[in-house]
Image (cartoon, rainbow, N blue to C red; front, top):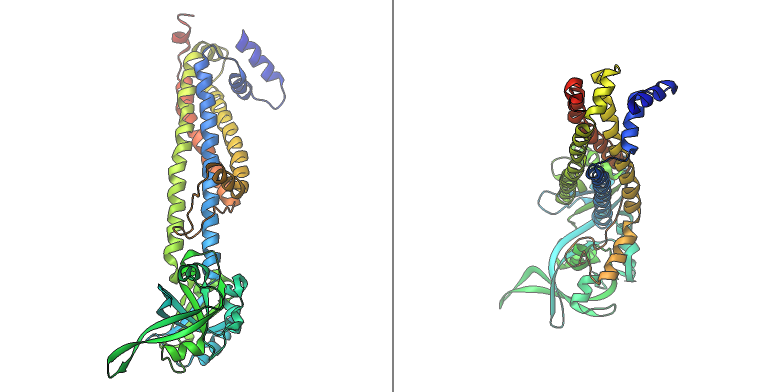
Length: 428
């Protein structure tokens, strides 16, 4: 009688199928078996937690990718021109030709070398970059991250040096101190080959929040570098800044064709490919791993619906005798399972988006409460958890979660449709 009245009310309600009415009624009803309700509740919570974690993790991975790109390209170049033998003699001609490209907005010559920096008993290896300060400011952001001094205090013949903050700390040097740079190119004397030494004055300290550069990069004037490392009038290459950094590969390819075989052009996607490839692979793997959490929660719906089907054998038989088709029975339980999935998905979307938007606040709070640092600055490139919530990740996560819940309803619904009314009502 209960099913008959439900069927009658559904048919009297305009635009509402009785399958939807009964499916939602089964979801709202208080079942005699509370264990079934508990499994349904666990399924909703599992889907919601899985989506929350997945959206948050993808946002953090996006944030890492953005921060790494921003910090690396704040010091490195979008495109770099260099000679095949490590020296570029006609760098002015190469820079002028590169500026003819419509994507190139700035150029800067540079010299790359390695050396030892000493201050008292402290010794540290460092990458030495010879720069033209006014040109360097156009292609890199080091000048914007000066903690002490200014980049334009590097002047030819004065032998000034700008150190990364971690490198300066390791050397125990502050602005105004004298440090000695030992160049690997030796000079021949009657006593043998001796290293070339030069005393430099620390005129500035920078911090770009990228440990590799902060702990291992030092800048000197390009003419001082030419004299110290015996480059003559040549340089290591020319750094370029382009309008759209995602077109750097195209610009590099165009310049390689136009500048000839003696000049090698490379872009940031080649120079730092390992960083971005590693982040992308980790993002994909985390997506797959955490998706399994959603899958496990979604397929809890299978056990929940099978129990419901078993409990509702008599109701299904009555519906069949009232004229319900097997396809209608299938739709009833698909609707019930889908409602569980929709509630879990919506709850996961709300929680996931909220956490992803506030992860930069939540994580420092947890660190302060626990008194620990999750990402040590001297171990990881980025010491804070960034977040970059992207609509595509949210949409894909929601769609995949919904599809998994739909798939989880198919077998129980098919089994319900196969119920034999005579067998189900035999002992009723």
